[in-house]
Length: 233
Image 1 (cartoon, rainbow, N blue to C red):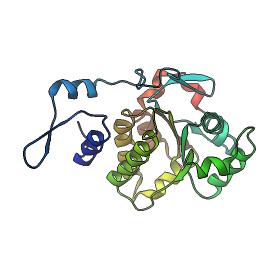
Image 2: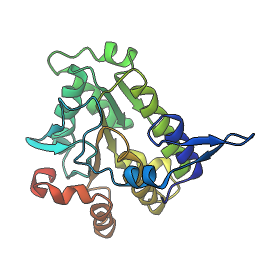
Image 3: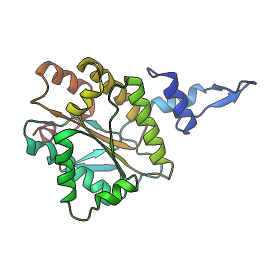
Image 4: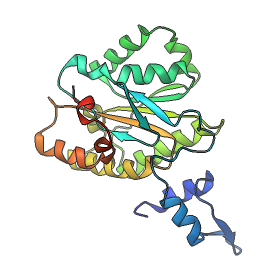
C-alpha cells in the first residue's frame, strides 16, 4: 500500500480500514476483500454522511471530495483569490478548515478572512473549526502522522468536510530540502484520499523553479480532471 505501518494502524484504529484481532498479542489481520475495497476508493466517491455535499466550489469549479489540487500564482493578489473564498465558505458552514502559512503570507490570510462577511475568526479558532498548523523540522512521516491525527480528531464528532490550504513556500520551511517537500506531497496524495477532504497546495511561482513545478503537477493528478486555467493566477 506504499505507506508506513503507523499509517495502517491509524487507519485501523479510526475504523477506516477494517481489521480483525487475533492471538494473545491481539495482532491485526486484514481480509483481502477489505483491502481491495479500501484501495478502490476514488475521489469521486463521497464518504458516508457527506452525500449532501459531494462537491466543493473552488473558484467557480465544482471539485469532488478527496481532491488534491495545486493552484499556482505569481502575485500577492493571486495568493488569496481561490483560497480565501474556499476557507470562508467552510468556516461559515461549520466545517473544519486548516491553514499552513507563516510570516507575511499568514498576515495576509488573517486580514482577508477577518474582512469576510459572516465570519468570527476568533470563535472559529477557539472552536477548532479554523486551525493554523506547521511542524518545522519534522520528517515526512511525522507530518503525515500529524495530519492523520488532526483529521481523525475533526471527524470524531461526526461526518464533516475537511478543507486544507497549504502555502507551499511556508511548508518548504518544514523540510530539509525541496526534494523532501515533494516526497511529502506524494505521501500526502495517498493519505488524503482516505478522508473527506479537499486540499489546495498553493505554489507561488516567484518562489519555485520550473523543473519543480513540473513535478508539482505530476504530484497532483486531480488538476487534470478540472479546467486547469482556473487554478493559474
